[in-house]
Amino acid sequence: MSEIKKFMYVNRKAPYGTIYAWESLEVVLIGAAFEQDVSLAFMDDGVFQLTKDQDTKGIGMKNFSPTYSALGDYEITKIYVEKESLEERGLSLDDLQHLTWEDEDEDYAEKDSIQLVSRAEMADILAGQDVLFNF
Amino acid sequence: MKLTIQVNEGPYQHQASDSAYFFTKAALEKGHEIFRVFFYHDGVNNGTRLTTPPQDDRNVVKRWSELAEQHNLDLVVCVAAAQRRGIVDEGEAKRNGKDATNIAPGFRISGLGQLVEGAIQSDRLVVFGD
Amino acid sequence: MSILHVVNKSPYERNSLDTCAAYVKSGDAVLLIEDGVYAAIKAGAAAGKLSGLGEVFALGPDLAARSIGEDKVADGVKVVDYAGFVDLVEAKDKVQSWL
Image (spheres, each protein chain N blue to C red):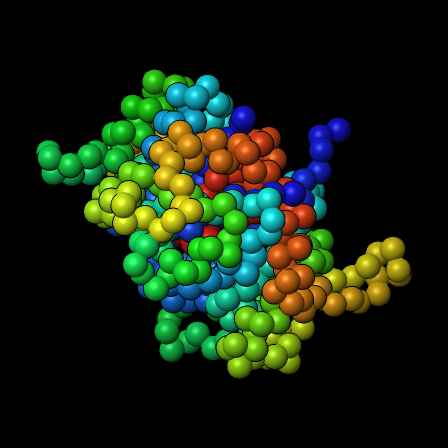
């Protein structure tokens, strides 16, 4: 039985201006099959990845934001969003997609995946990880 | 120490590939094991054999190929990122109907699982990017 | 668990050093590489940000390439080579690349 590691995917870049947001999500989806203890962190411009109502028709790019709502089905239940990064950018939790997962241990009760954390709390969360992915 | 290195940027445009190369070389010289070097995003462009850099500057692709040969390194180019950017081996050419291949010696094209596996099996993941 | 924070962009171009600074804890180390070494210029406005960060290192080859002589490096910043970079990766539990 191999050891389970705490994997954190750190997202600090906005979507569409560069490909990092989308291609990092692709790693998360593939990585889900490896059954590690996965969390996602969104800070700095990374918080923009999670906004609702992204309309990409005019820029001719695929709108990949619906993929975030599938994360619950991949058993990714810990999505940390940094409060200060949101506030600095004039955003609140209401501007973000409502991401959820179903807890099969509680009769498939729907629970929130996004946890709003302060910069200090996020620093503690990062410190407790085994592996940090950056894109 | 067992290391997996991730390279997020292509040759010349950013220093990432150079930094990753010198880090990897130093780690090998110290006797550490390089489990895998994984090329993602534009990093897949380190895997084309068709570059002709100026004679008086470093040959980034060749340098990686030579290091791989010298130390039996596993240089992996992500298949999804490679498809997007046109890095092609025989298998990909057949699968996707391309009339050419361009993969450089010492590199192989494989899935993102190789990066995840590297992170699981290694003691450290070191990421070089922009 | 300790972190080796690697900053590769100039503090005058990007906010990575500032973000990094908010995440550094006691026992961590910060390594400036590539354009990140510009933060180590003693006379630069960013040099002041380094003193609160604990152990700060700068990659010698990147300093030299950018004509930052050892006499111009901020006090307290230790210059290392790629071998030293490898040692730092080993000494800390994991690496956070502030790209």
